[in-house]
Image (cartoon, rainbow over all chains, first blue to last red):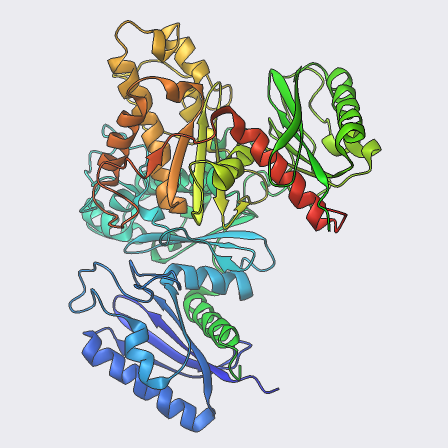
Length: 304
Length: 304
C-alpha cells in the first residue's frame, strides 16, 4: 500500500510554516506565511495544500502545531479552537473549520507539543519513554511526550505559569505576566528579560547576574518537571536558551535543588546528559506537525 | 470462565493490610500485620495467602501498594525493590522475591499510586480521564491516574519534594526534610506540623495561622499539578487533611494563585467540585492494590 503524503502547519505568533511531506518526514515543499488575521492566512494555507497536492500527489491528513491556548482534546467540541489570545481575529478560530474544504482528517496540538513530538521522533529525545521539551522564547511552554504521545489532561499543560521562588531583594522586578505577575513566564521569558534588562541576555555587557537569575527560575521548572513527570530527558530550547552559559547554570541549579534526593542512572552527575539542547533546532515544530498529520491519516483509516 | 481471586498488600510504614478479594473488589478476608523486618512480616503474608487460597480458592495474581521509594517499572531489574528507607531491613527488599514461592504474577506500585487507582475505580475520582490524588500524612505524595493507569517516568513521582514559596518572615521554621529542608514535605507534612507546632493541626488552640500556612503550601502543589497535569479532579486525603478548614483554605489559595488564567468548566468557582476529599477513606489503598492484582493476573494470561 502506498502511504499518502501529509500536510503540516506550524502556526506561530509571527509566521506560519506550511509543508507537504512524505509520511517518513521528508519535506517535499514548504512555504512561510506571515501570521495575519485568519481570513488572510488560512485561505493561503488551503491554497498551498491544494497546489502542492496537485504537484506531488494526494494528502492523507493534516497536522497542526499551533500557538495557544487551544483545544487539544479530540473528543471535545472545542478541538482545534484557539481560546483567548491577543492576536487579532484568532480567538475562537478553529483550524478544522478552515481546513474542512480539503476533506482530510486533521490533528491539532500546541506548538510546543508538536516540537516535543518532533524532538522525540528525530531530535534529542529519540528513543526515550518520557521526554519533557521546554521552549523559552517570548513565552515559556513545556510539552511532555510519554510513550510517543503528548500528555495532557483537561487541556494542554501551562508550565510557563508555575510559581517560582522570587526573592524580591535580589530581583525587585515585578514580572510581566498579566495574570500572575512574577510566575516563571513573568520573570524568565524573553519578554520578561527585555522588560527587566532592556535587551536580550546575549547583548548584556555583564550578563552573569542575569544568567544566574534566569537559570535559577528555569531550574525551578526543571525540578518540578522531574518530581511530577520523572522524564528520561529534559530538552530546553528557544531563543533565550541560546545565551552562553545559561544551560550550564540551569544544570547546576537543577542539581543543587534536587539535593541528592533522587539517585538514578538517568541523572548523570552534572546533568550534561540529562538536560540538553534541542537536536532539530527550528525544524522540531514542523517535524512534529508532520507526525500529527500521519497519525490523523492512520487513525482515520484513510489511504495513509 | 471463572475469574480467579486476587491477593493484595497495602504496605505502610507501621502496618501491612493484606487481603484476598474477588476480582470485582469485594474483600473475602483481610488481616493487619505490624510492619516489622521483612523476615518477620513477609513470611506471615505468604502464609496468609496460602491459607486464604485453601479456604476461598486459588489466586490469579497479587497486587502490592507499598511505601517507597520503590522500583515501579515492570521492565527494569529493580521492579518491586524498595530503595533507600530508614525502616530497618527494608532497603533492597524485593516483594517479588518474597512472593515468588506462591508462583503468581505480582504487580507492584507505590502506596499513593495504589490509593489513587482505588479512588479512580471506586471513590471520588470515578470516571475521570486524569486524576491527581495527594495524601498529606507523615509525608506527602501524589499519584496521577491517566486513562486508568498510574503515570510515571523513570520512577514514580515525588511531589512531596517540590519547592514552595517559603516566606521566612511569616514562617521562620526551617523545615524537616533531610534533603531539602523547606520543600513541601519539609514544611507541610504531618511531621513538619508536629515539629513546628508541637502538636497536630486539630489540637491547636488557635489553628487559624497554621491552617493558612499549610493550606498555602499545599496550594503551591495543587497549582503545579494543575499546570503540569491538568487533572480533571484533585483529591487531597491523609490525616493532615482532616483538620477543619484546611481543604477550604486549600481551595481558596489554589484559586487565588491560578489568578483566573485558566477558564474551563472543570474549574468551578470556589473549586468545591474540583478539589475534594477521598471517597474511600482508609480503603483506597487496598482497593487499588486489589486492582493491581487483577491486572497482573490478566496480563499474565492466567486463569484470571
